[in-house]
Image 1 (cartoon, one colour):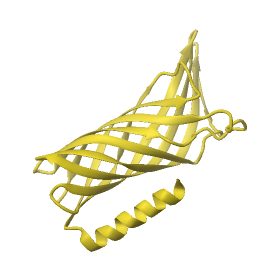
Image 2 (cartoon, rainbow, N blue to C red; image 1 turned 30 degrees about the vertical axis):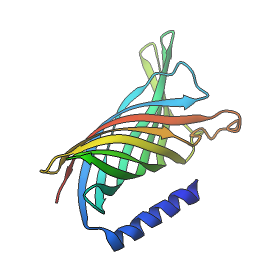
Image 3 (cartoon, rainbow, N blue to C red; image 1 turned 120 degrees about the horizontal axis):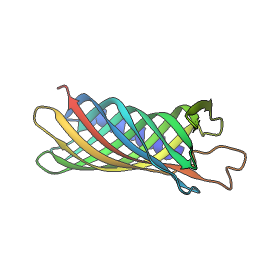
Length: 195
């Protein structure tokens, strides 16, 4: 998986230097509706945010590639009998999205994503008291696959909705061979291209 993502990134960057007609840069931010899938049950979603920079490399009027560098807060929560536990993951995500414009301004997009863990914490709350501790059982790398829709206006303002399907186990504890947990995140974003 790591080799595939590295080859994809090198191919995209190399191809963009040769055949790109136009490169535009921008920024985006939005809301994450995150949860954890896999060997879990009764987890609630966690609403958080993402923010970062994007570049769109256009190869034709219909096709472009959009690499991004995003800070993304993810995780999930669990509540039972007045006790609440929240697992918080902070990532530096690098999605590389292939975009196909199906109509004026409207695009469908898909592509791989690699996430680098910045921090992972457990927050526990009981009877109004809360405590936050480091989570040492988190994997430092996360792989996923994104699918989404976008709309770009002529003035550079753009909107997107995307689902990130986690492919790798983000749990790296002693029994990680028997217990697998993946990030699943739905993102709604607003962005702006500067040129």
